[in-house]
Image (cartoon, rainbow, N blue to C red; front, side, top):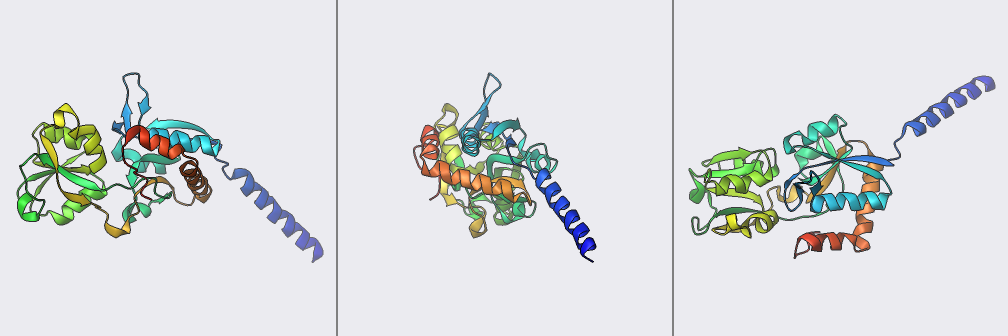
Length: 259
């Protein structure tokens, strides 16, 4: 009996040691980023990606003392690439939603801004269903904003685009009547640009995910709680030590932290 227990104990200890050896330490982290969403991310002429999201990703890695590599990925392929282990987490202005929580875990929110409609100045007095009936609404596909439009504007036509920057690009080209996107991105990257001078926001800010979402988060594969714990701790640290504020102020004249 005692001999059998000893064998069982050795086997159990061996399994524990094996599990510990295989558990990731996250000393190296691959981060999925987008390059088509200024001022959050953009590709420079030198082939390097920059922007708010990129600076946040680098700040988190510095705080975690992790060696990180950035992997650029088109928006539509973000979640599939995460599940395929092309990278370990996504820092790409991804809104936390109940639907996305079914396939990925999220960090605490690292910013929280509403969405807004943008159209030619004076074209629409409001954003009621009646006003937008039969009009073409431009929105990024596979986003909470696209779901919001589908649910609330059933009598409107919808032009789905691949990335957020395409919303205002298609709007400026006249291929839609009104765009629905990030209010902050629209303000900084479009409304203040030469192309956006004749456009304005229409209606009040909107949270397309309602009360079920929690801002914008960093997505990770389900079950990798050790990474999530590290990221959340690092996010708290860069918020407390002023690093987050310095990044925020580099791009925006308002606090987008949401707290």
